[in-house]
Length: 282
Image (cartoon, rainbow, N blue to C red; front, side):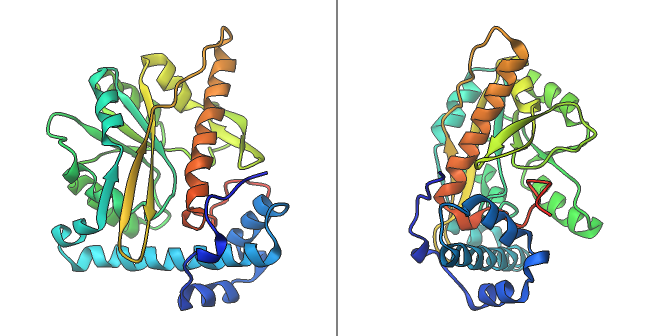
């Protein structure tokens, strides 16, 4: 049974979040379906309802912050950002074998990372971000341009493995979204447990880490109040050793999913519940 790290009664709700909840029919709300799916046996209907309203409140705040980025100076907004755990990243880089940093759709993932490189001495290092194209081209260009202007080199999620390999060979640091459902067309996928439910999971992260002996870290973004954000870098996920190569990849992939779970459950309302992570949820 999943154990939440926070009291659900303390989750922040906004008027807009409540409205979004009541205006979203259950049949059309992936967020409601996913929350029910994961917490059916561990939360009461009232608790699941509050979690979902808190999620909608969080997402509307995300939209406001993305707009604020265009209206206020980056220096002014940077006061809202705190980074924890930089020593883990510095240690990984010092090993000289490339660094993989996996993350998920936590907090405001389109806002908080934009301030990361300004707070890290990145002059002698190259940072990459694997990104999937958004459905709307004009939004895609805005978000990609913001990340590039902050110093990230963008790797398109399609056929990303070859570019990531090159980056790791040159001791690059690659940010890798790991909570996405892999395409049915790719071969690098296995079935793994995530939040107590089996789902297809990309195995490329484990493959690349094994191939280059690269350190694998994780990072999460959280909003701690209406304005302040934390970027938290977690310690290296130590890979398992197994004489069976494929089994080792599967076990390591499961370890990455477990780390995602731990990060998610700290601030459960701040994950992208409306995403179809489990494809058979209707």
